[in-house]
Amino acid sequence: MLALKIIIGRTRDGRAADLVTPWVIDRAERHGSFEVDVLDLRDWPLPMFAETMHTVGNFADPTYSDPIVRTWNQRIKEGEAFLFVTPEYNHSVPGVLKNAIDNVFVSFAFRNKPAAFVGYSGGVAGGVRAIEHLAQIAVEAEVVPLRNTVLVSKVQTFFNENTPRDPLSDVSLGIVLDDLTWWGNALQQARAAGELRPGSARLRAAMAAQT
Ligand SMILES: Cc1cc2nc3c(=O)[nH]c(=O)nc-3n(C[C@H](O)[C@H](O)[C@H](O)COP(=O)(O)O)c2cc1C
Image (cartoon, rainbow, N blue to C red; front, side, top):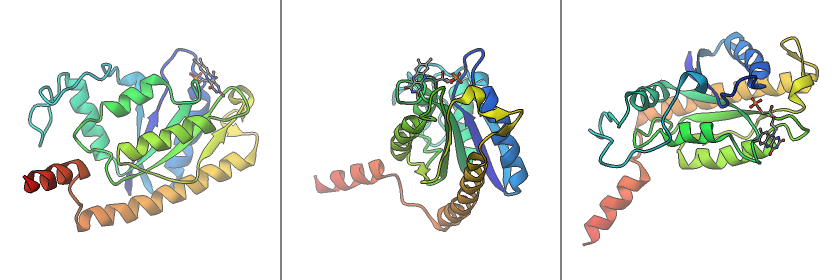
């Protein structure tokens, strides 16, 4: 079983996320490949990112400037696959989600693990621009963004109880979960066989060797 972290990227009262997430969590749990852990950012009042190289503490086991940042990094590090649920805010992800990713700092907790995305919005776009943006953010966090996604448009009328009215979304979510399983297992094996040190460390070492 792969440790799947489902990250709920919105926190406000009355959020439409609550229409989407029961379906996503239920499908992930019934898939049979995952130990599902829901990381709802409502339960993670992370500070606006404020770390510096001096507040991290021991880089091998960072303490950070706030205990919740340490716990957050540890929970992300446990993950072997990630599924982000995000609305579209100004053609991107909500600031609270970007901040949660920023707070994964120097622990490399996302590194060399797959991530997939469920987007939703009030209009027809279904969060597609948020997902495109999130895939770019993911690259820099060194999490491996997957091609297949789930889009939930007109979220307020999308579900009949916990079931999407359009079967395409349910089929898409199944494909995403299959992809996460394949990539999760493939990258788990690859990490176990040995990882390159982070590029930033190799760059520093190579440049120091030149002087
Ligand atoms: C600040 C803000 C910006 C938004 N920007 C977009 C957008 O760029 N594209 C879009 O399709 N919907 C946009 N919406 C509509 C949201 O996708 C919709 O309200 C959704 O329900 C928000 O998710 P939440 O209720 O879980 O917070 C925006 C909503 C807000 C409040």
